[in-house]
Image (cartoon, rainbow, N blue to C red; front, side, top):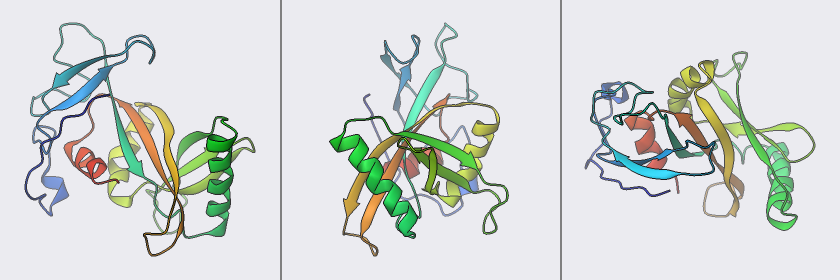
Length: 192
């Protein structure tokens, strides 16, 4: 997948000032997944166009799928999450087995009713490891409700000693039908 980014010098503090017509990114490569993710072609689409989420500027009705990288928050806060990430890391990188990722809304969450849990399954059933960043959940909830999220997969599990808490950290790749909101694209570009 190829990406071309152009950033504004500063992002406004008012996140709600971003609309579908405004663009933090002037051009982003999108993937046409016509054969269920097997045969892909790449085409540039300008985010400044006045197209709705699922419309494309092509003549055909082939939907566009966007995949962005998200940092999973809160993974270093509990020993249980670290244990799950350790086991998943071994399963993925040493045993070369599949580990799946899932997104699950948590409306009964005491701290945040809009929380979206990130869960992984490394062979023992789904295990909670962290959350999607709070400022991004308002963009993901409607997609989950409309079944517009087509795929969630582990982007990376790595051990880090650079943060306040050392341990395993995780990134997740989320694919949706249509374009991501420009603010979400901007936040994804900040994930390292």
